[in-house]
Image (tube, rainbow over all chains, first blue to last red):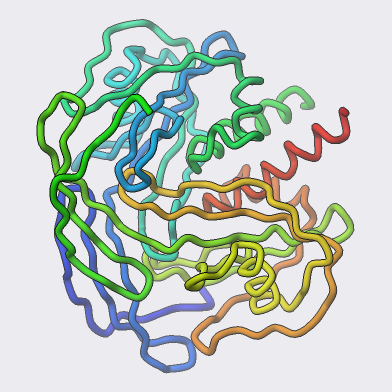
Length: 182
Length: 182
């Protein structure tokens, strides 16, 4: 690593259910001091559930921070000690009521590295078997089943504007294109 | 809007330089009360600067929240009252020392809608004219100039794991493919 910022002091501002907030005092590359506001998050998974290679499931839910509904991949926070794959299988069943016969890692993304450490592990779930939706009693969402071509149009025209959802869909298409070439 | 969460109380936890933190008490769709931790951010822009249709500029910098370097699109926070296009032009010159002759909006993304309201407006910058880098004295970064094909490989093998950067590059490719078809 070439660049670095050494922490010389950490102030804990808040410990919450979803996030913790710290303000670190750091030493920069030019030896000056600076403050860094850091949101700590346990990490999450998102799942692209695919039926028959060209239909996918999305969910639509209200997101309080943006005061609006968003169309997203099924997703959820990692529980303490939980492996990402385990979390992906649990969240998929909870939110859309399917268990994946096959789960492939697509990529992981840092969502807001300027102020948060949140990482989202994104999986492709296929060979889906229907079970039963098991949502928490404070989760409200609609399930959408759309063709992958329609999902691309939704990304292009701004109906899908959630980062993890765009990455999951476009990464899968990119990978799929490569597989067809090779 | 079908789903909604009405705020009945807001507690201000922290007002900072980059983020503010609130805890809202809300009424859910089932009439129950819940708490929502909300990180407020002013929004940002990211720019995909392209030379000759197949070479792009990326930057590599240390990100304190993840204690590591990341390869990213040039990007920056919106200043008070600043329009996204203005911010894109300013940040591009500050970080890589180019002014775009042409600036096209690709899309906007919500990065962490579960706990933050951050939105990033992503632009394609082309017809680039060299000027001079004007970084803040606490900004340290390397500039990388890479072929777009290499950038795709970097996304596929996990050398690029920043959400806005993956969205910017793959969205551009998707759009470019469509243009070729039409």
